[in-house]
Length: 416
Image (cartoon, rainbow, N blue to C red; front, side, top):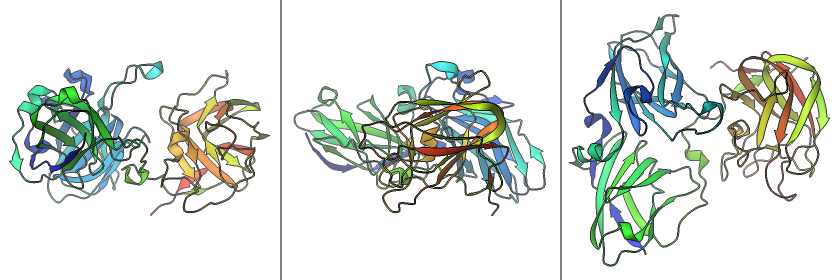
């Protein structure tokens, strides 16, 4: 069935609805506070002082950083981005870090997937001082029924991360798909039942609501939006929207601008990939030590200007896959981020269903294309495994001839 568009006219800001805190000397993971899901908020006070960079060992999975209530940055597990710039402060300032857990990894070496902040959390100032706050208030936000029941609602819009509440009426309940395309990122409940998570980057822009969970007459909707909606309205559609990708709305930053430093560097390997979607393993004549790995594409199987990689795995001296845990993308010359998520991070995220793809919708730069991975530390590399993008022969971007470079610093950040 369809449901006419309706407004969620009440709101409850997270910062106005905090429970009693747990005091701690250092921020610990969510499980250390007997919590296994939802969100968690860490609060401390930073002294007056110069600008600097706030860094955590890890944040799982997303952490929004606020200074005196104003957002200053996001930590993002996908890109291993755990640093946020902090402005200068003329007086002591309140630091809040709101962390969202996106579900636990339940396989492989990261099965012990502890959520929240991982210490140490340090502010390194522009003059070189390192400040590690040692007085924290930690607020558990499990997003359960007792928490929803305790919210203090206000009429009108809230700023920042907040809950929203509204209602609609139906004469005869039936299945519907709530259109959440004007919302940011969060969780939705109907009549106390959690419908799941939504995220405006897609590809789904609707949430399935089973008819038996609706009531004849009045139905209540509560939405937690961590980013803030474009407009706090919902509508029910007869059919779902399952394929609308909007990577341009992703809050993750594009790969940091960097300068490639390959001049005078000799490739450690030159080769040709076979056609087809099967993963291909390459071993070097000799193992090579370095921190950065560069794949340079010279052409494609179909002779078109595109390159794509579903996954890159590097092999250690014994031929075993090197964990991706601290890898980041140091440089990429081209990535598709409009109409399709072809971001470079897809090449190292551990999934072969998505892939890095060079630009095709607004520009079509030609080969060579270069992708540089920073391994986070110096590693001994004996080879690598290349997984092409999935699909049949009509899918472009499969690499033919290529070169590989390994060094300590193949891509250097450009200083502003």
